[in-house]
Image 1 (cartoon, rainbow, N blue to C red):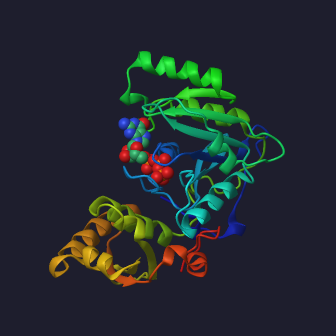
Image 2 (image 1 turned 120 degrees about the horizontal axis):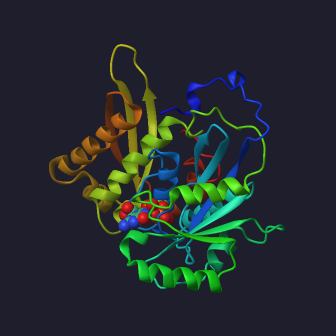
Length: 320
Ligand SMILES: Nc1nc2c(ncn2[C@@H]2O[C@H](COP(=O)(O)OP(=O)(O)OP(=O)(O)O)[C@@H](O)[C@H]2O)c(=O)[nH]1
Ligand SMILES: [Mg+2]
């Protein structure tokens, strides 16, 4: 695994290959359709967290998929929602829009298990009224969950009623059809040199992913509203040459009752969470770490624009 932290920009040495293609791809869709699963499959590494709950992804997450002849820079985005309950939701939707600003093409996912439906809201929120219509692919995801005859019917519906350049059935979870998606993207990318070193998979700092892993474990361990009320901040990250790396994480919740749930009886629930997160973080970083997790209450943080910006929802992902 390589992140941009490991590189000095001036060391970049772009190959001058006249057939090389590179560009930006926005991955859009409603919540829970499998955007992050597809992005991870394409990159070949789990960068975005995946859960069975809607509104898992909150930022636009940049993942880089490179080959000898190409570099696709994917933006995984938050699921498009109609009702914006909190300022956080509105900021998440801004992150959807900002992913498409520089995009060379757009991939819209829909869930093959659901009744066929228009993708107008997704395009409206994501692409808005960008002057030039971007090449758009519709991915009919989760095809593993329905019968081949059903897939054919749904494919026909989408091809007939939705104005996109192509429709491809895929199972992002099992990697089926993912190469077809890559080929389609490749055909839409302009000729040009790579933007990033070829072995880089993201430009976000390691600590961003550490926070996301903790958030994934919260989604997995706690129910109902609790995971949605959590913000995870990596407040300290110290690499230590003679000891395990030391990572200090704070989980911010909105109410004391949520703090009590997170901590659990005699702190057992939080301990369980910290262990599950640590194991995944160690797997991600490929080294042992010491993880300290603390829970804090900040009332209504999801409505507080200043705090939301501080937490990095204003656009560029930043390390606190
Ligand atoms: N069976 C099956 N499940 C899938 C497939 N793709 C995704 N899933 C599951 O669908 C759920 C949602 O996947 P995500 O990748 O988190 O979806 P998302 O669109 O990124 O969701 P948000 O970030 O909440 O908008 C998870 O439980 C995935 O395992 C697929 O091809 N087949
Ligand atoms: Mg996601």
